[in-house]
Image 1: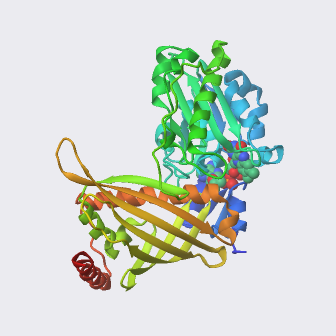
Image 2: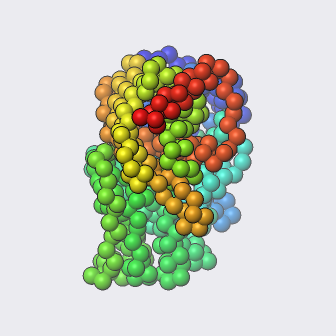
Length: 471
Ligand SMILES: Cc1cc2nc3c(=O)[nH]c(=O)nc-3n(C[C@H](O)[C@H](O)[C@H](O)COP(=O)(O)OP(=O)(O)OC[C@H]3O[C@@H](n4cnc5c(N)ncnc54)[C@H](O)[C@@H]3O)c2cc1C
């Protein structure tokens, strides 16, 4: 068990001081996510800064026309508050549906928002309500607070004091539960402002909460279940995992959204037989995780960059070292910090290229990755990469569509974390990788690397590349 000091500040200023003094300190609210991750050795804060003695963080009060909920209010406290019930019953209902009574009695709204779990209920409720997250430094609108999987706009030293909910005309949150944890397989929050603007926020899709703009526009124009009938939620925005396919999740979004609106309009939520069918998801190569990126360069140039260790080091999130050990074999050190996970992997990557016979054929390679995270266990993955040449219809330039498909396997404590978290982590890191990679290809200035030996390695790779293309 890692040794972590325990601090118990008594004021907002003292908490801020603790965070400023100890860079690797972590706030402790109810400990429902943090302590589980810590016990598994997935994070190693130097200090826990317990918030329970800080006054005012448990307040629920009316501020003008808005409702203030302090960051340390537990789900149970929110669920039973008469003030919340009268001001916005949706918030009571949402809080009452979280996990079980034990977790509701200690888990807090502040902890849930800071954690931003992709299957949590509060982020969807707060986003649909267009609420404001108030920190020790500023006020952050929900639209900018949530920044994808387990990521928020909170900066180092910044922490949540509470949430301000403006009054709305009507709101509802419905979720289809994952039976074991009661986290949302899919959850949909719908809120209608006093001026009739509708916001729809969805949780459980796999990559963090998101809004559904087409449904929002349709419902703002016509507050009827039937306004949703022509709409199909795009399954490409959802993830497939052990519990549900992307198509099933997309279907649930429509069903729950219809039910939420019908609860107010008293219509039937049933989908009419004439409703459009769900779009087919594109055929895919085998592999549990997959993705596709359009890159602004020809396949040959993308290929060259993919084999350049200096470029890879710059683009892989958390990569602190990357060396070429022999032709087509790399060693890398990668620190993954996402939500409760904070682990350093010593990774080996072996690259197997397939012969490329004709220009119209995609270029293909297979990467076999083995990552050791010490006592946490081991991760292995086989990744199939395909580069397809695609012509831009406007500029006629040849770009590249890079498709990848991966099947990861985990052992040890990492496996205990479960596929939901690890798949979501892998998917999010790949998105970050391709965003940076796309930036490098479009000529963003690359920071010169301090490690000169990498340049020597890059030269080796280049020579090897030349040999490869001459074959
Ligand atoms: C089995 C299980 C089932 C669950 N089911 C659901 C569910 O159905 N729906 C749902 O929405 N949630 C669910 N949860 C999540 C749970 O309800 C908690 O809200 C969540 O785990 C956060 O817990 P916590 O408040 O104890 O925060 P902690 O675990 O103490 O902290 C979580 C993170 O937030 C940070 N943090 C805490 N407070 C603040 C703050 N004020 N400012 C900035 N950062 C802060 C911490 O440093 C840490 O990184 C479930 C959890 C478990 C374990």
